[in-house]
Amino acid sequence: EEDPAALNLKPDEIARLKDSLVRFFGTLEKGLLTLFQSVCGGVDWADVSSPLFVVSPVLGYMFCIYMAFAVFCVLNVMTGVFVENASKLTATDEENMHIQETKTRKAFVKQITKLFDEADRDGSGKIAWQEFQEISQDERFQNCFNKLGISLDTLDLRSTFDLLDLNRDGSIGIEEFAVGIQMFRGQARRMDFAMQGCS
Image (cartoon, rainbow, N blue to C red; front, side, top):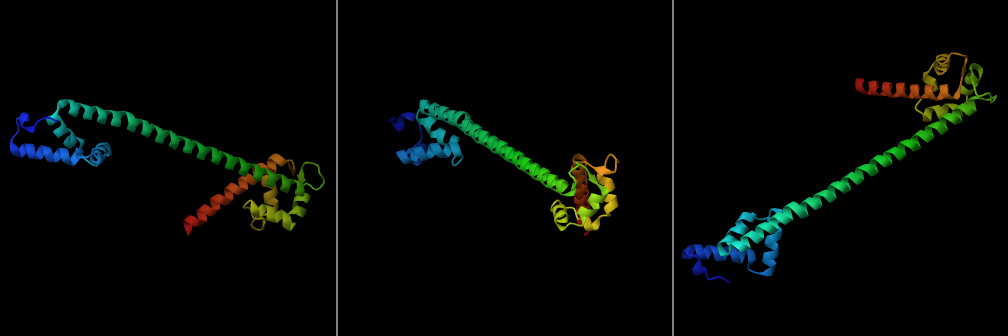
């Protein structure tokens, strides 16, 4: 330990120096706490380094090297780890959304296929106008439409058939049926939003 008198300091300056050294480095626990607080902002590290430079420039520079290492190396690595984890979480969320969309699409296709098979009573692969009239009175068919957000009670049956008959050949194929159902669902959503906006 260097003699305070050899530092060419006034008595009051020596007293302040000792007070700072004891406060920051009086014990091992205090020293560790000071190093931690210097990195985390609990104490201004310039205040910590000043008495060290007075006692010995080597100690001051060693403390500065410690701060540089902690700030530029350790904290940057920790930041990189957090950013990487956040990116992984985002990627996982996107993957889960994609899986959910795939499940929803499969469920939609299943519902559409079920509706079409019930309507295509002669198994021709086409729904004729007469078949559409008959199946539209079936409560199960109506319930399937309701699950898709389409109420047959509010639609004109002939107009609905004509809208689903995209190629105008007098019958509805499975692809026309699926596309038409999607169109009706989109229109229903837009009408709901419009009604909510008006209310």
